[in-house]
Figure 1 (cartoon, rainbow, N blue to C red):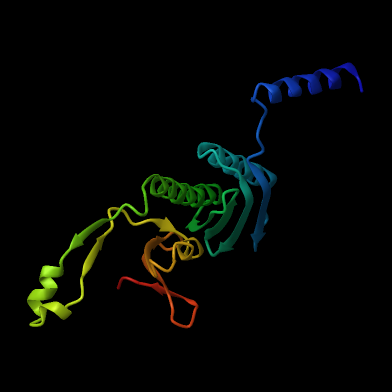
Figure 2: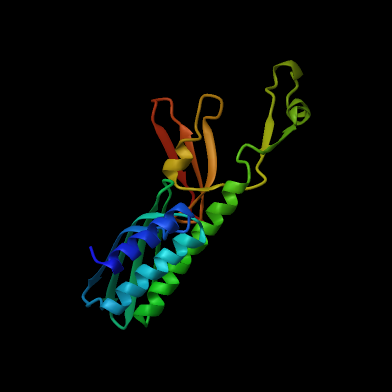
Length: 205
């Protein structure tokens, strides 16, 4: 080991001790093309942009898979990201320029991560309960047999994947309403009588 290597190693050790060592934000990165060649410049730019996004949210990307294909005069980009805290993100976009196509697709990942971060700041259990038993009694002549109706008013709708939403099901809460992080639509998961988990994906028409 020559003097320059020793100095470099010493400098890195000092950075580690001071907590200033560079963190590898993207562990596994792949960029493949279909019906097109992916240049080194675009690949490096995509990896650097992914690392910058991970840095922005103080996260680490365990896997980043980018697939770009040529479809007529358009470029179509798909990005799938898995983070170190177990979250997964997916986005797709089409544009006439490959660089712009990647940037706009990654921007959608950025928006998903921002919504996820905001949702995590708010308590999922922080819903207001409103006793509307008087309404039930007014509808039933037999006030004693009318069931108690509790309105669950959600202040915010949590942004989650279906898998993460299912983790919130338990004996005292067999139904969970959330916003699907992949489709941005209102979804419901619930405990079925057969022991499995049901999933309702509502599509607006």
